[in-house]
Length: 276
Length: 294
Image (cartoon, rainbow over all chains, first blue to last red):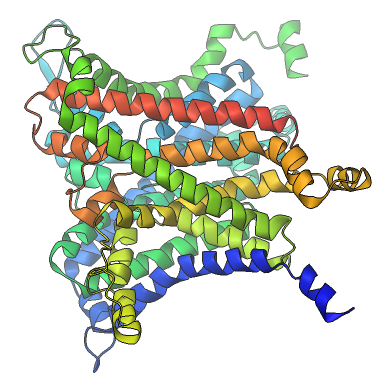
């Protein structure tokens, strides 16, 4: 093959766009890392030592992880039986439920939290009386925790539901259910011992996406007044230069780990979430 | 089998009892999704004294502050949807039918999955560390090329800067949507076109593009909505100094900056409407494409 014809087959523009894309991906990350190391030439990891030495970081980070875990558990408890029941007995509800799970794309976090505050900042009264049977959820800690976990469940619903539903499509839940029923299993046993283990990779990928959404989330947390990692990082950025860069780089690595694990468990198709 | 046993009467399940299984889900959706959204809708039609009014909706189109914030949000969403859409399409093209080595495809898809999820505060701070006044690239350009981008008119905290930041999650989303669509282009179409004497340009203009166009447009509309609903990235980058719709709504939640609560709710409703139209457009166009790209 002559040099010229080889040159003509060389996908020049393909490489051009790919390299440009790679630069767009990598430069901000490289710059963030380099910037975070440039605080003190004598001690390049000073920004990391300071960040990790701050107890407020650990407190907020721990809280975010607990919230993520609570969101994942509650989502699984809500979504798995629903998706299962729709596949097994109630296919006529599929369109409605799918529509609802897509609604978070139409109602962004800022609108969701606006509506939640509007609804749950007034006390609950028994209808047609003035008797208060519950204080506003936004007024006490357990209440805001319920609200924020519910809000995170809403935000992650499209991904969680789709993951679980796709997972159930690949296993024959009808046959599994009938086999289990003929052996005398209860509904609880069927879901926890038969269905859940069979869709574990789908669950894991849904859970990791939820984790990626929740851990850095800032809108719900700051408007509901929850001292999670997102608001902490935001406040840190208001009066610090190097620590925010260090923690931003760390949260990028966390996103990478979550997405890498998803690739590993699902073996391919990347997914897009969004806490923009 | 299950249907058969039901109709035989072995397990008499009346239809309303079947619906009990999805009650928790609907209850959850009503409490934390529908009720909050619906409340904003009703509140947008109420005057400060609680009476019914259309004033808030009318003011959406007359109050300059609000009109400008919608304009700005629409502009930035359109610019980043178009830019991210074109760039993302070219990237997806390069790794699917563009003749690049196969392994690069999964690398790009993984990277895109990460980048489209890397947003909000960390993304804003990453760009501050990169292109801010003290940023790493800013310093490199100044020291090695003697080019001060800020003197040259660039500002990260402006429209152009924010667009650049938004692009970071926009074009990867385009890659994720377009790569499967480009895979759907059948080899036979290209071969058939070449057999009939078509050149590459003709193939793209007359065959590939018409098939792909609904998909490209749909994806760009989705990108538009993606940018339109963004709040945290813009807020973290500019501290609320850029007047997007989401930023105005955030300010309204913190304290009644519009001096009329109903107007804030009306802004929120207008936003949900635009997001709804864009998602509807996306799914309509996506359904159109699926006929060809299966």
